[in-house]
Length: 234
Image 1 (spheres, one colour):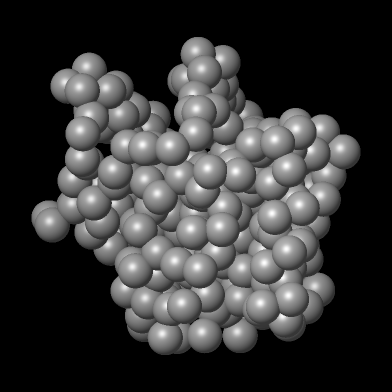
Image 2: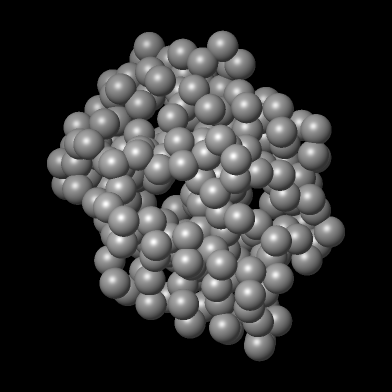
């Protein structure tokens, strides 16, 4: 079985369209929404769609905005407890194209480890990004590889497929970071556990509807978090 995890906070403009886009894929994905108490009614909209997608659409509701990383950890644990073999993470704002899910699955099946939707391999890229954002993002991955030797071109990418063996062998309670650094930490720990990481080219589009959750704190966490990973060997 295959589970896609999408964390949400105030995504009423995207959530219904995203539910259909994921669950209408021919590969038979299931979808778990982890909602952090969205005041705009996102969770209620998900519950309405559960009638239509009975048994394939699930929701975890949390009491507040607790961070992207903790939302994924909660989702990973739920997926493992419910015996999913492949567990995905992706955004709700359509920056990740649900049509790319089958390609990530195919790469993960061949790799039996981790498959990352990558902006920075041949065939990948970004759409409608200003030059300075491309420099920061690409420079961040170069920085990660210099410090950690991760060997992944898109180390901060958040469109990922994990085989359950990867997540079950991690101590998920020991994951320290919640933003960009969370994505780096997960890949770093997977590599240290001996799993291969495949990169699948994707086009990453900028959000059209809703409000970005990006902040300077997230970049700060990523910059210093990488140093912490390197020198504390987390």
